[in-house]
Image (cartoon, rainbow, N blue to C red):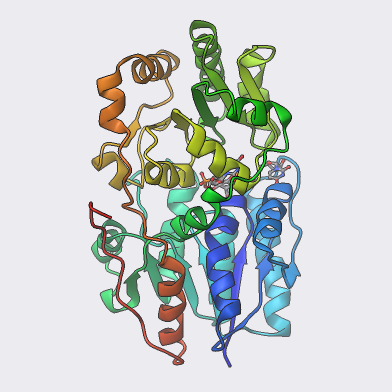
Length: 384
Ligand code: UD1
Ligand code: UDP
């Protein structure tokens, strides 16, 4: 039986890898050995706990205010030792974090085939998102099996000369994770959130963490949120703060002490998806949230200049608004006060998946390793 090794290190990788790990563990065709790098700690463990995943190996690399080079070298070093002791038949990496690229490089150096989940996303700007756009492109060069979430991401890979025979469109496993979690009505551990959930108040849900937004842009976001809080006393702003101290130091000072702003620790995935479904508007620079919120029909304002996820922008549910303070304020104001505009964005669309991405992923890996056949690819239909 072939051994496959999912390797991941951060919250979004864990969320998107969990449905694959569960499907591999349920399959009689594979031995699944889970390795985490620990690039994130609390935010990673939270997800593994929720999905009942106990890693077989943990490199435990996290350092406070870690540098990109430290994540890269500590991951490669840890995996080098692991692969020297025993080699899996394939590794699975997800997305565009430094964990995923470092793991792909370490596997490539050991001659282990790399399966890349969420392959082919491109913003077209090497510096944004930084370093993720570079990470994705590097990983694509050393990948054996490219699992593209959408036809757009497949087209990006073909345009870069990747052989179409090695690309499978699976949909994004984040939709599998979302659909199995969102209806569970997980109770909020913070009593303020449980009260808010029962109050019927409109909620603006905010997340931010992107490296290229740290500094001036994030301070501007904090000021924009403070202005929104002051001008909309009936609105509740919920900000689950990323654990990164650099993010907290930039965003939180402007909003501290505001009655209608609730700053929390990172919410468990169950709590976060429930909060997403309760929200009126979502303001974020996250990749995963851009994929989940459209499924729930929530208008999403993305605080970035570009996106590698154009599908929901094309569908009208996501708008790119950049990071200018005044623009953030005006775009939120417009969604709160212009009902026609709100209704035009609040359409539930699922361009990223149908909840079956993990089973397509496992079937594609089975074909790669000679123990099964690929299944039909994901096709987006506006009527899903
Ligand atoms: C990382 C990924 C980014 C992804 C994001 C998801 C890279 C380069 N960046 O960025 O692509 O979108 O995760 O959130 O791979 N920290 C903790 N505990 C945690 C997590 C973080 O204390 O559980 C703190 C540490 O001080 C750490 C800092 O946050 O040094 C930054 O973490 P890091 O993984 O380097 O960057 P992210 O911004 O989280
Ligand atoms: N998320 C979560 N708790 C939170 C905030 C976000 O579980 O408090 C989830 C969210 O549903 C999404 C993922 O984390 O699936 C996004 O992670 P993040 O924004 O950190 O990374 P990105 O997607 O931008 O790489």
